[in-house]
Length: 172
Image (cartoon, rainbow, N blue to C red; front, side, top):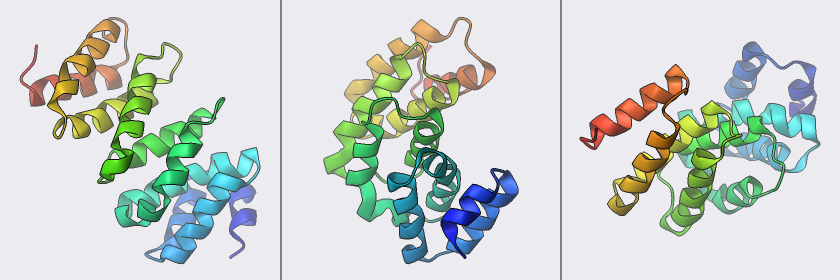
């Protein structure tokens, strides 16, 4: 399969599933997808993000050698929402290496407090921060404050994730 051509051919759930199936449990194929995600033109990187996140959700160890590059990518200015959304989605299900926890925590706090950030990125950020709060409970009050500030007028998805967070930490 020519992965780049496949990515450009169509942007659909079916195509995403085709790419995920092609990668399977093959780290080398995942690395090829990851390289396109990082180093290709705008449309390819945007479309590669979706299957990349699904591959990591199925095989969390795939991302392990790539954390540094993944975080550097998230720090780029004017990053497309699809890239942020799918990256933060995958960060919900992995064990983040300790040396990268601070950067990821900082990024997720920025996403959560940013008024212009799409709700999916905020919701995934709540989960990543909640996961990190198990190791760093001192961040719980800040997460709670950011959630409470935004609850009025938020979407059902945001309210649901907020409710989960409050319930898990026995907060009101």
